[in-house]
Length: 618
Ligand code: ADP
Ligand code: MG
Ligand code: ZN
Image 1: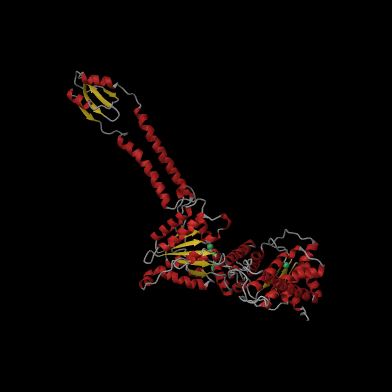
Image 2: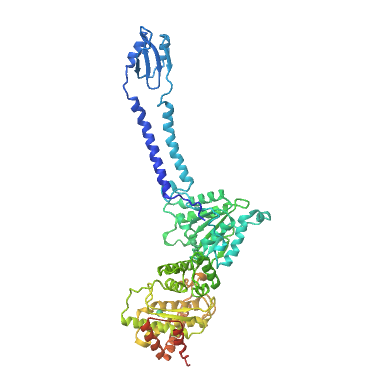
């Protein structure tokens, strides 16, 4: 849908530079050419000419700008040879000529008359100014003097051919419903203003990266058929103080001219960070000014004014300045979350329209295997699968291509080059089998689908893949404890088999501890501490398993209690994991031996192994 995209590519700047050079050359020529022409032979000295006039020897005179041509009287009366002299500024000359009865006239302007000279002096600067204006009007190039302070907004004008609509976005139904209303505002603002409703000015799209926020904003513009100004928050913030705010001013000026339209500010957090949280930089004047200008502009267009709707996107709403979220600014917030199972299937359907699918491809099965994937990940998945099929010289994409693409994306590319020593391999094998066995015996935990000791990606030496049988939004205490035990399963296996532990389990421990801490401080699952939230603010759900928020100010006693509760949860889980593995020691050996042989165990084979597990007798 990018019919017209500004700013112009560097090519047009090149043309401008050439134009500038040409007009400069023109200017120089005008300076020197006249004097070149004029510096021909001066002819008769002016004094001699005057003398000849006074003596009555001259018959006709033609007075020009740069020279005087004249003829002398001859006895025969025939016109004689033409003499030339260079005139001196002399107002008396006409009088003198008249008094002597000389026939005289002014020469019509020759090539280098005052007219062309004036033209030569005035036109090049005009060209120069025109180019300057042109570039300023178009928002300038990427950098350079011409563009300072001017908005770098890209303007998308929807075209019929590549228009993005809501049909191109899937899996974010709630967000779509909210935005349909915005489309109505843009299409028929009068319907709302007539009964005195205030059209919302700002809509904030909140969600993790790649969930389709930018896509949704474009779809709103496409549905409403209005221009779409897009700029990224980080582009406002520049080295020079004052540039950002003038960019904001300029952007809104442009937008108002094109109203109704949409202004889309991506990465709003880059400018909209809370002004109080400037940290040790001692205040960032530039960003603050830019933010203030943005607030001013949003307050600026009142009801009945041009319909400019500001859409903004961020994945860190908690860092935004509260002033931005006040009524009349970004008072509407739309959550654009990761898609659920059916949403993922719908997104896959959209993106697989562009590729050739084989007959065995089952999009639903792919969707089941990709929990947590955002829209952009799924788009990437389809492309990866297509690449794999092409690499294998196939005409269509097979289900197996998707399976491999998923693994690639989930665990990073296979690193065949990384070679483990035999002992390392053995440790990794027992470690992973430990995860799998504990995981398999935990209540409500995901099914273990695959164990592998082929190193992948950056961190993992091996991995255990658990797939949920359904999408989960809520977990109970037992399930969380089960997850912690599963995380500790790897280390527990190392302890049992080798009697020592390696550094390989550090990531597991980190995750287990974080989870336990969240159980106590966020989910209120500790009997000792009660249903209190000890963490500050709300952990944004969609941000996933990020680092825990900073703790609320708590008394020293409470802090100690939290620590001991967390420790208790982790230690209980550890003991549980040890117990399970000890109880099934032979099976642990059997699976690990098999794993060392084949490097990967998955599917039915794995299930039949894990079915042999004995439940822990207590
Ligand atoms: P965000 O702005 O939230 O980071 P984008 O809108 O830039 O994400 O998404 C990047 C790409 O991923 C889109 O161009 C589109 O191809 C794909 N995509 C993301 N979300 C969706 C979705 N919900 N439906 C269809 N495609 C999506
Ligand atoms: Mg985006
Ligand atoms: Zn592990």
